[in-house]
Image (tube, rainbow, N blue to C red; front, side, top):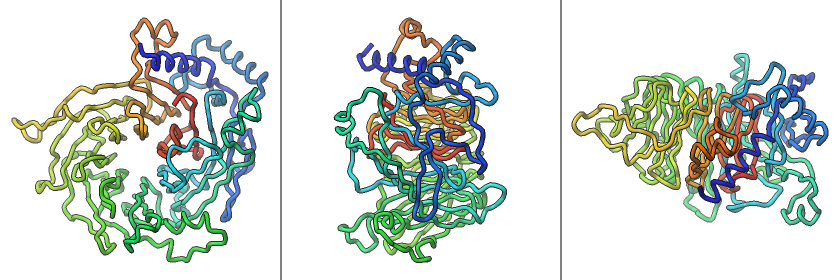
Length: 496
């Protein structure tokens, strides 16, 4: 066993045993939102959104709560596997986080995306800043209240440590003070099922200017709206900036889908913009931005799935190749140059819906998928060969790794942007888990660690109600942002 493996298991066992424990849930306040026990607030120029920053609870109270939980259940408490009693929720163990913040939005968001900024790569100092876009899900049929939110989160501080000296705190450029959430709004007339951002050179061709940031929003009404949010992002750093009404108008409204959909992806290898969209009828369309700035959708869809298309991913290294995952239990690989519009490779990998998929940007032959039965796996695309003897038949290869730790549907999955062995997984069991596929232990070592029921590759478990989607912040190593039923969370663990 490697030193990394041993360290990961020791940290992992300690985190699970001494980490998250059930505690009584706080009652909702008069506004209908749960109070943040740490009582932090964010203020925006446009509106005030409530938010909170998790901190260390009183040590004596924490010890008492943990002892009460252990008196009820002498075994290790595993979030997502051990059922909470009515009225209980989980409190985070601050010692396992380097950063942890939560915030609430006007409405829940099913989807969001992190926007790359010009603040530099490999950022490790605090306070931190993150830019993002998100689409809302207004409740009670209030479609006209939906919006595309452009967000700037700044002043994101490092977790305070007990027994930390002032010099240690100063060395991390940490500053005390409340985080700030700034919010720009673009009205939408329907719930956003999926949103993705793409950065492209300015239409003027002047590369000295910052890149243009565009978004594609796949709506519940089956339309796909493309917006330019460059001005909204720039306005955060321009005091007194006022955006004209025209800034909120879409660049294009795509109406080729006859049913709603959730699958959406921009090509990373097409700078101007090449968009994949898939719907509940199993149809996949390709829309391309022209040199003149217009948008053209190929009228012939890619067909082959017998049920809804749940996820689409462009190849990270082949500009004409993409993969699709469907509720028919299959993953298909396509070539946009194909005149037949049929898949080049057709693989049946599950008897349940394949909800999510992620193509590794470091090791191009690895693909991760998550299913409705809670299983997720990693596949080696080099083993997915077309069946020449029987064109169109489905292959049934074996995964290179497979896990059934989660017992509820997998709702999000994403490879670490720079470490091809680390994967983040979100599940409907109210947990977000981090995995290191490089860790290997035999059964005897797992039993000695006291974690026989937990895969040794499991590094960390983060509790978050109804996790819908997660993304790594690629410019801040180890940082993850996620959206759930109670808003957004952004955190960085000490284990990744």
